[in-house]
Image (cartoon, rainbow, N blue to C red; front, side, top):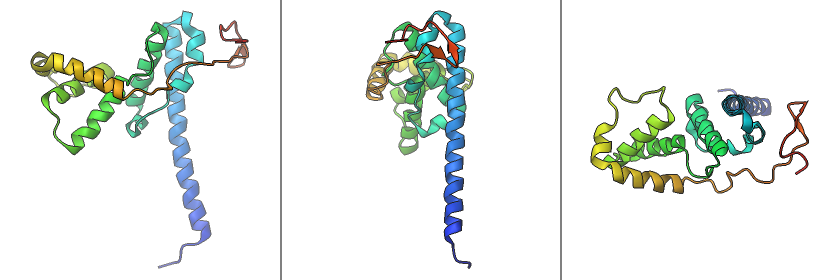
Length: 183
């Protein structure tokens, strides 16, 4: 077996870094696209949306999947424009947690109901099952409500807020009348 050289290690490291940067680059593109779409839906909120990128950090390895990360971004952006708290866990984050938990042990009925509810909220274009989660909701609805509040609170990201925004009055090289300019 040939001996590994320093050049081989450097090449392996270079390939690892290149792969990681490619993944991050894709996520940046997805986030920027979601911001642009939110600006089109909420033109009066362009300033806050333009400065929202720092809130869109992926929080789970499953967010390397486009539809998972985009859902996460969309929920945070919608909260931002409606003035809702951006810190609690998103439906996509709850789904990521439920996925992890389901791989360790069977989910209880309320936990399975929560997973189905959050999946439906986060990924309406990616149905998990042909049948909706009506049975879990009918049997465990109030317990699922409590569980959802608890899990979103526990998944909160305390610094996922838009504070201390400074703006030069330029967005993407264009002079704008941003409410954050000179702040």
